[in-house]
Amino acid sequence: MAGIRENILNSASVRDAFLDGVVALDAERPGIRASDLAGYLQRAGIPLRMVGLDQDMSTYDLFVFWHIAAMSMQLSVGNAAHGGPIFLPWHRWFLIRLEQQLQRVLGDDDFGLPYWDWAEDGERQIPDQWRTDLWTSAYLGEARGDVRSGKLGAMRVRLDIDSFTTGLESIAPRPLTRSAGVDWRWRDLPNKDEERFTHGVTPYDEDPWDGRARGHRNRLEGFWSDPLRRPGMHNRVHVWIGGDMGPGTSPNDPVFFLNHCNVDRLWEHWMAENDRQYEPGPGRGSAGHRLDSVMFSIFGDRMTPADVLDPTPWYSYDTLLIA
Image (cartoon, rainbow, N blue to C red):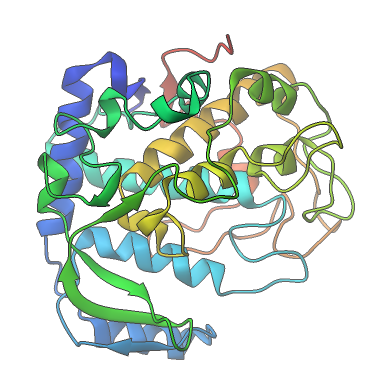
């Protein structure tokens, strides 16, 4: 079914369903252990070392694993999920798969993932940006330190980055952690002016297809800007929240999905106004990022960017407007 994705701050029912759903997925054990994930990496030839406890993984953990595994698959441009044209369609498919799992555990085929319009909070004064309703016990819990209040206080991190090898480690379960607005590099969120700057450019992407490209994808991903503006957008939101949102295991924090749902909403606004163009096409540009490249997945259908350029079979947004 096709759900409607809404602003999490505008709907208490959507907020509660999202929080209940991710907590349920984190509690669900599908019978997969950490050793099974290590074996998958080895069989698939993915250059990611996994160490630590052999423990039962949750359904939610599988999304954390999927994301870090994709980041470990280096291509001639970026990796299998970031740093090139594949960034937006790959994360669109990633969100769809999480949304489908939430629909299953909630028993609601019409449930749509909510988004967080972080540019609205980016209009606030810097000291106030992390002191909003989003970071209270009614929503996501603490913006700084361990998350112990609200529904997400029940979630536990079991997959983390091993600080010695930068590999993946199965750890003793611990609470989520955040450090919103603390990182000295980006102490503020993107604002509406930067959002408009991201929107008002074509093409979707262009040669050299990486962090130097000047198209819409790279501005929205957050690697490139003109000399008068800072980079940021998606990347800045990860750094601004910090804690578990910082490393490749960032889906540990459910705010990951609120961030990426908003990124997807901004992309959908751009796509609706630009004939759903995507570059590079078949046989062009970097392998793995082409219109017909099969996107990396640990479960579910084999999909290409061409398959997800129109999301209406799965969902729509309550609004695509940029204020």
